[in-house]
Image (tube, rainbow, N blue to C red; front, side, top):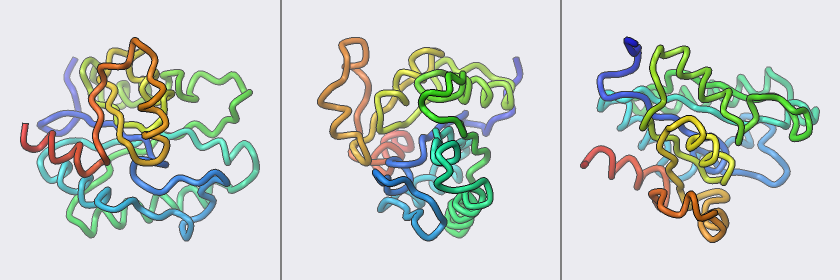
Length: 186
């Protein structure tokens, strides 16, 4: 299998709570989409170093009618514009638009978002870092042989306190910037 990723490989990030501030009432517009300190620079640094950065995100606010696809595209344009201005690139963004009770295959902890990225890049997910702040992000990564990575931003502190035994050994970083620093200096 020949991969179409950057020379250093693929990195998959969750969005809310990893890249931007999360909200119990959902992030519903580009104005509400506020990057976490250091996250934009971290993505740009990883991208400039040759990594292919992709985002895989549950966006049940679509199914709940809290925002529409136009608003979601505006949020993602803002993300890409900010990363671009910092000299980097978000290569691909995939989302699950379904609600928690819809029974779809793409809502994390299910793995269809991740396998969609693997197909797009014509690569396996073995060892691919998947950075998240919630248990469902880690479970999705583990289910496809990727490497789950936890950040303490968003829901990460709560998640770290309640990790099941099977995930207790996952690497934990304070935030996306700390993860990027570790990757770039490994």
